Amino acid sequence: MEFAQRLVALVETGRRQSTYKLATMMAIMDVCVENQPRPDGTLAIPVQELAHRVVAYYWPQVRPFAEYGPLRQSKSAPPVILKLVGDARELLLDRGVRTPEAAREAEDPDYLRMVRSVELILAKYPLTHLQTPTRQLAHLRNDFIYDASAFHNNVTRRELEQHGPLVLRPGVAEALRDFAPLLKPMIEMVWVGDVVACNRQALEHDDIAGFLFGSERSHLLSLRNPLRELQDGRCFYCDRMLPAEVHIDHVLPWSKVPIDGVANLVLVDAACNLDKSAMLPVRVHVDRAVTRPAGDLSSIADLTGLPVLKTRTVNAARGIYGTLPPGVPLWRAPKQYAPHGNLS
Ligand SMILES: [Zn+2]
Image 1 (tube, helix red, strand yellow):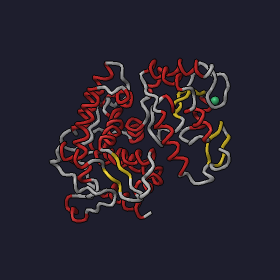
Image 2 (tube, helix red, strand yellow):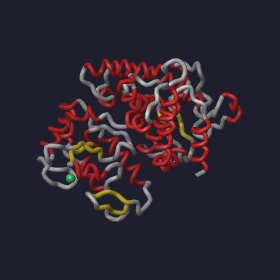
Image 3 (tube, helix red, strand yellow):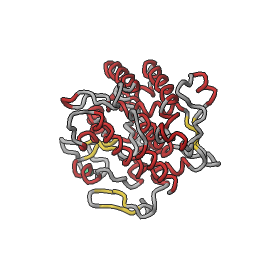
Image 4 (cartoon, helix red, strand yellow):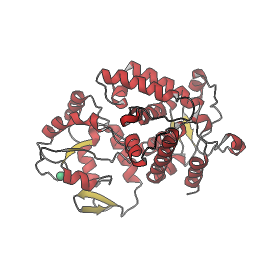
């Protein structure tokens, strides 16, 4: 609890030039949800892994926001990472690669080059300063999340390689995983506030939150036909025949873990989609989704240009359900819920 309070204080009092620190914290938390700490309670995270995830956060955010165009995420010069992501996004979309995860799975050289640049920027700025609330309070810096002594504003790639991964202090990974359901929505809110403050137009918070943190639905439309075929025209959850109007659902809700992989996506009717909303489903739905035949999932991935991401989905499910307190209601079907821990 003390750890969470310190982290909240850091986010609330931190002066930010840009949203880099927030993106980095979100990325660290997602890694903690999807990975088990070592027996001594530490968790090693390659800086490049954080770069992949920071890129994934910014990927939808660099597209134009309605008539306003691209949103600013800094009060001074536009952040370099957003420019790198924007350029790579344009290049890859032209080639039919829709998501950063798809580019990563395909080991796209342009994507990987961009991620390596982002990796170095992360080491120079957000990772160096993440645990320092403000320049004036630099003496209060407290490396309670990880030892940041290897990072500095002029860190070179060579130094970074010698240093190896970032190592979360004992107990931090577990705390971040446990508090992620509370901390992530809070950081998203702070992020939205920062973006609103950086853009002069009177933007509506609600619109911005959905735009910045929602899944990019247009990328998922191509899944409709192949999933309809795979599911024999039935809703994944209730098994009723699907109507013409269908919804793509993230089995593990996007708000909990942003996984746009075929292993985490199913075709459902409106009744199930609207009732499930952002709730976690009973575990059996997740198990059914990830155990669909690997050949089917990968041919859908080939057809749609989306990655499968089965391992990430399985690991995220383990992290989420493994730490969920018993009794938390899970979604089974419209108006049907089951408490976690009871044959879910
Ligand atoms: Zn249904």
